[in-house]
Image (cartoon, rainbow, N blue to C red; front, side, top):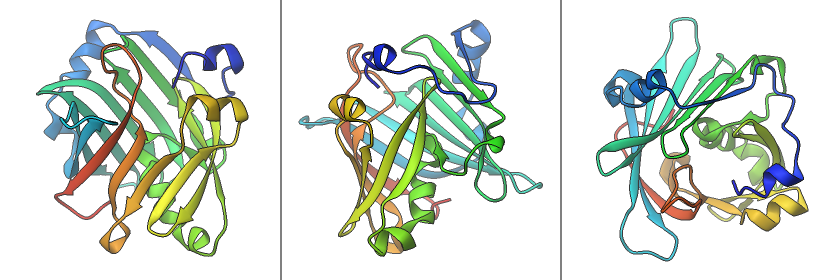
Length: 222
């Protein structure tokens, strides 16, 4: 999200939220083989908005723990080099427990712990699609579904609405809406997300950007 956020908003009150510079141990974590993060669910192809050539790809991988927790990992690659790792841990009800982002391009690491003490509508990148799918009944009834999105240690309010087969995610703050255009993701068969348009985690030439993402599923979404 754009740097103007740091001038407009204070850091949110998430329990155990921390930020650190990228260290060798984090670089090693970013370089960990993708297969170690569990079953491959889909591959996303990321094409900058208005462009014709993909710039990144990312993978969604899942580990289901015996205690009912789910670990969802998104790994973004530039060519074959991992540049961003986002990993979310949820309890058996889907509530966010912990989140970590290792951003090689920014040289930053962000951690969130103790999130289970907060509201169930707290969302991060790897949990966004699951959250939307969980609330499809309300969306199809014409209701708007609020959520709080965590990004780089801060919390931002958004609202989901459904328009045909497309879920639209719009910032509830006037100032955030100036910086972030509405995000859209399209539903396909079995309510799987088949396309996304909006802000993405990696940087292009050092800048944040919006992109169109298409998905190839290798396993049912979870």
